[in-house]
Length: 112
Image 1: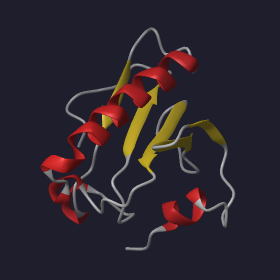
Image 2 (image 1 turned 90 degrees about the vertical axis):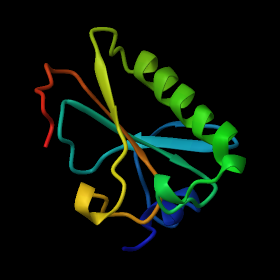
Image 3 (image 1 turned 120 degrees about the horizontal axis):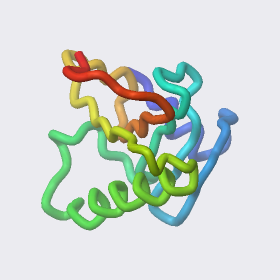
Image 4 (image 1 turned 180 degrees about the vertical axis):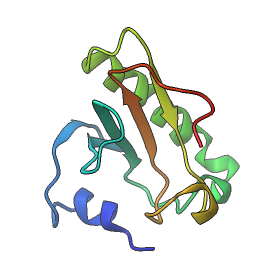
């Protein structure tokens, strides 16, 4: 897996960025799975959730609050889903922790 998201953070690859602060970046997914599909990534490299440590707790909370803020900004008041894929078996294709915000339509369950 490559770290294409690191290149987006460094502005070596362009993205449709919808939010940025000192710790996180949010941008529209180039292969959306819902009318609204935004990725939230930490600027600090954490390859996957299972590799996060207790020291990452504040950053992980910040990512969830960023997802909430972006969902509000994108007018997803009717509902949205936040997904974290952990490892290839779960569908993680980029080796950097990222949150998917999916919304804009009724989402089915179970997801996989």
